[in-house]
Amino acid sequence: MGKRKRAAAKETTDHKQQSGSRKDHSMTDAPLALKAGYAYVSLEGTAIEAITHQEQPMDVIPPHYVQNRIERDGHPWHHVTIINPTELPRALEAIGIEYNKKKKYHLVRALVDHILREFGDANLWDPPEDLGLAYAEHNDTKAYYHVLHWPFGHRIRDRLGLGPAFFHVTIGFDHKDVHGTYKGPGTVLCLSRPGFYQKHHYERLAELAPFYNNDYDFIKALVKQGIATSNFRIAMSLGWTYLRGINTQTHTYL
Image 1 (cartoon, rainbow, N blue to C red):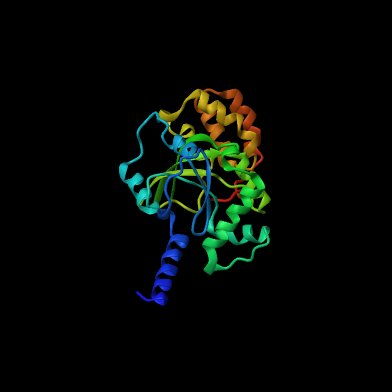
Image 2 (image 1 turned 45 degrees about the horizontal axis):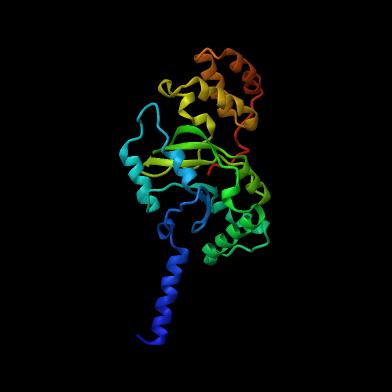
């Protein structure tokens, strides 16, 4: 093969490695690792895998849901989206980089490097807290996922000029993943399915309610479940927030 052909072949190979999907990298053995996707930034690691492997009160996720996710991602491990593709231009602008669609992967890599310089090694970050298995459906799509409480992630987004988001780890979905709909703590199965209710779990969710004053769905679900399970003190205290008519529009659906 001539030099020109070898150079062209190498350039093609490098481009595929750099701009390819998540299929191109291996599972990290670090607790937390910030990763550059083709057009998004995500969090992976053994701490995230530990969340997805927690035993559930009931086995409700059909096997093909999990398989659909694995086929989409190209591997079995999980991730938490921090910045989605539609937010990428705004995040880049916040750090003084002009968005160029043809150089997406390189720009995401630069964004990841910037975040690590600003916030340090991801292994030293405060990790996400698992709020439990959750479920959502929208049009013809259905998905199971773990909702996460992660103030540190909101700090990152805030520094980049992005609003709050509902962080979650997708476990599986039917047909395709659910997008464009609410995936916040109000969808946690502890608040909607009797088989998943545990008093200590409910009380922890109620403790976090002040962090979600703009999440109408969450407060409403807490009040309803509080009444249904005779947690009247919690239900009454949260009821005032519910009655004020707050909404979820201040959050981003990742």
